[in-house]
Image (cartoon, rainbow, N blue to C red):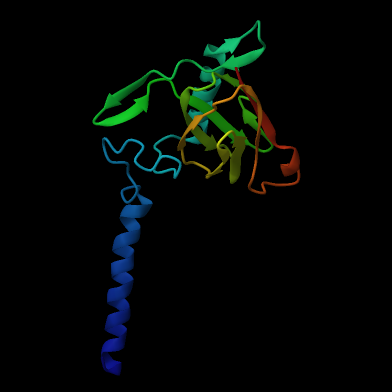
Length: 181
C-alpha cells in the first residue's frame, strides 16, 4: 500500500468497525438464539432481563417458597424435564447478589438433589462461592447477565455462600447461607 492509499484504508477500517458496532449497540450481536438453553451453564450468556425484572422474580421466588415454621426459603423440587434435547429445571433457584448481600440470604436445599441456580448481580461485579463436598464452586456474577449453574450437595449441613470478587468496603461481610437437609 502506498502513502496515497493509506487514508482510504483508514476510512475503510473505520467504516467496517462502525458497521460492527451499530448492530452490537442495538443488541443484535449478543441476542440469545432460540433453544440455546444452558449450553454454557455457569458461563453466563446473553440475558434479556433487566436487574429490576430479575429482582422481582427473585422476590416472588422467596415469597412462594417461604416456610414460616422453619423461618427459611425452601427450594422446591427442581422438576427436571427435557426440552429441545436439553435437560432443564422447571423450578430453578433464584439468587440475586447486591452490595453487600444475597437474596435470599438463606435457602434450604435437599441433600443429593441437583438444583439449577439462576443468578444475577444487581449492581457491581460479585462472586457467588461455596465450598461443597466435592470442592469449591466459584461463579463470577456480571451486572445485567443471568448466570446458570447446577449444584448438588451430597451431605446435609450448613454451607456459607460468600462473595469472592472484591465489591467494595463491606465485601468481607458479604455472605449468605445454604442449609442442606
